[in-house]
Image 1 (cartoon, rainbow, N blue to C red):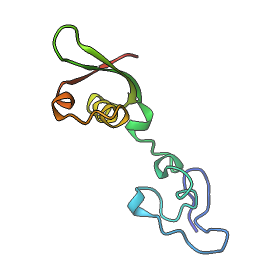
Image 2 (image 1 turned 30 degrees about the horizontal axis):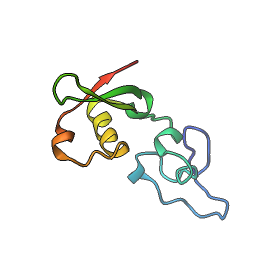
Image 3 (image 1 turned 180 degrees about the vertical axis):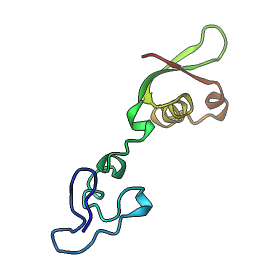
Image 4 (image 1 turned 135 degrees about the vertical axis):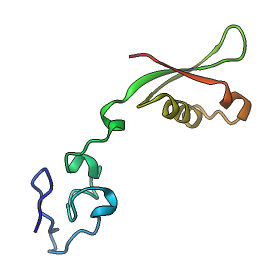
Length: 104
């Protein structure tokens, strides 16, 4: 029986071992893995979770540029991907003209 960083044992309530193990990148058998992010469970917080920033999304279409909205993401590329999905920007030409500017 092993423990993750939070001290949870590898045995589930039914006595069976969890099979989430190495694929999730945490200690094998942690019973919290199905409930929460495995990286948080075993103390390995990823950079994406640790450093979320607010980004202002702008579409450059000439002068002046068009404000699209704000998203929270770790980096500029992820912010643009989230904006495309969140604000339903389906036109490929508009997607190419998106710019993310960090606010905080």
